[in-house]
Structures are given as structure tokens and as C-alpha cells.
Length: 445
Image (cartoon, rainbow, N blue to C red; front, side, top):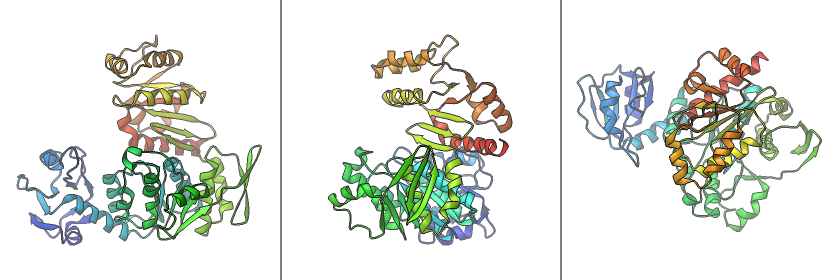
């Protein structure tokens, strides 16, 4: 529980007025989502590009909130307790910064144009298996979620917090540096991505490299990007860059490589070997015995986030989770289907309001049909893919909201399910849930 008076002290240069606040007032958590019910929660009204959280303050009150952080005066029942500040977004930044500074562990940052999530997942599991307590995030790279995490981590007893940091525009990663200081960082990849927000490839390089501005120790980068960094005249921006020469020999089912002159032999892994080498170099600089980490690398389930595909794999199971929403790019949908078909796994389609197939494998949902006709000339190709695919069904709610994992595993086994379509707005919850599934599988088989 957090003391409201402590929050007032943190925000002392932001707070303009308090209403009904008492010395013993406390709250459990912060939320900016009015319909998210939190017992003894603090609702913070944030103004975004498309809407203003102050419009939902009354809804938040109806959903049980009694403590509010606002920068506009809203008339509420007398039971409401209000902290009125200059700007709630700045206030949230200050709370995030406070939390990150209170955290007794160390932050490690992961960024790049591809491979961030799988690298975050692998590094976190290595450190956990080595005996450390680890907090890690993927898909928590949006500003609100990251600020909430940093505020909440103040009371965590974790040794490390690994942050996946994304950006689709110039200056975003540098802004994150105002909230947190990183112990070490990895840039897993560089290249052309999000060019609308970055202008050009140089913009991508500059944006990703800006993680070095708030990394205290080494920033690890694949040496193959050094030439472009020099050509773009970005080589002198940060003195903490450590280029890693990616050299290894592949022999049948093994990789042979050297980390700081130490010979390492790794059994074949489904993870990107270049990213593994970056991780091992980081671990070496943390004085970790990397020989003891190899068992994790060789046995951990694979976590790959490919656009709106999540791919989990361990020695016994291979699950593909595909997020697709009505406003998704149809071409992206086609490319993802092509990718899935190369994996030779059996499929399950979760029935959603977006895509429904009956036993005859015909499209029933007119909304999606109309959408594909209007916006995608490859409609016939999509239909053919769907007809050629053997689907089975299970409800979205039964899969994702199912609390009894052993029963769910039995459902998956009985139906030989290895491929799942889900609605995209559940992506964060799904990732956490699937992780629990694999933790269960790993401990029972």
C-alpha cells in the first residue's frame, strides 16, 4: 500500500490542491483505465492524442475509485479524494522516475528492430535459472504501461528488471531515459523499420542507439552494424558501445564459439545464434559463469514475436498464437498465413466475431468477407488457404480465461492442438497465460 502523503511529497512541485485528503489515506495501485476495477486504486486521468481521461472520471468513480489524480476540476460526490496537479502526464513521469530510483535491483534494456521479445524472454529465463529474481516485460513498451511498471517496481525485491524498449518515432527511446537508468543494454538488430516515424534508416539507427544515453555500462551491438554507424556519423555519440564480433562454427547439431577467449559449445537452439552471442557477452560482463547458463539456452521454449504472431516452442509442444483484428493489414494476414504453413503444425482456430468457419470450411462472417473484398485483391487466395487448412474450434473465453491449466492442457492434448487464432486485443493477457501453460508443462513432463 502506498501512502497518499508520500505521493504528494513526490509531486510537491506539481500538486496545486488537495481535496478530502487525510493523513492516513493509502492506495494499492494506479490505473488510467476507468473500467478496470482496483480495490483502493488511484485513478489518473491522462490526456492522449485521441481522448482525455478526464471524460471518464465519473465512470471510474462508479467502478469503485475514490482517489483521483487530475489536472482539471471534475465535480464528484463528496466521498471522492482528489489530488489536483498541473499536468497528470508529467506527474506520472515523476512517479515512474521515483519508482525506478527506489528499485534496489538493476535494469537491463533490450531494443532493436527485430528479436527484442525473444531476447528479453531468453535473458530473463537465464538469469532466473541462475538464481536471480527477475522482473521482465514484453509488450510493456507503451508509455503508460512502462510508467506504471517503473512506479510499481519500487517495492519489488527482484535483482534485475529487463525492459523491452520499442519506438516508432524519433525521440521516444531518449524520453524513456528520463524515467529509468539502465545497467547494461543490447541492441539486437538495426535496419529499415518504422520509416514513417524515423524518416529513414539513419533515423532508425539514431533512435535505437539513443538507448546508450541512459546506459551506465556497456551497450552491446553486433559488429556487422559498425560500418553503417560510422557512415551515418553516429559512432561518437556514445562511448559505452561494445561491438561484438559474431564468430561461430556450426557442426551438425552444435555451435562452437568463443566469448572473451572462453570456448563455448552449445547444442542446436531454435533461437537466433547471433542474439545468443550478444546475451552471452552481456552475461560475461556481469561476471556470470556462462557455462552454467547453457542448459537454459538449450532447453528453454522458444518465444518468437513475429509481427502479430507469437510462437512458443519447447521439446514437447509447438504452439502458434496469431493475433488478427478487423483493422489489420490483409497483406500482413496473408504473409502470416504463409509463414504458419511453413511450420507444418496442426491448427486450431478460435471462433471470434472476426473470422468464423463452419465444418464445411466456408466463411460465415459477412463483416470480414466484405472487408476482404473491399480492401484486398488477394481474397481468393485467402479463401483457398482457409479451405486447405484443417481447423478445430474452442471458444476464446474457454482458452484464455480458463483458470484450471491442467484441464486446459488436457483439452489441447485431446485435440492435438498446436495452432491457435486469437483476437488481437487480448495479446498482453495471452502472453502471460501461455507462459503459465509452459511453466506447467515444464514441471509435469
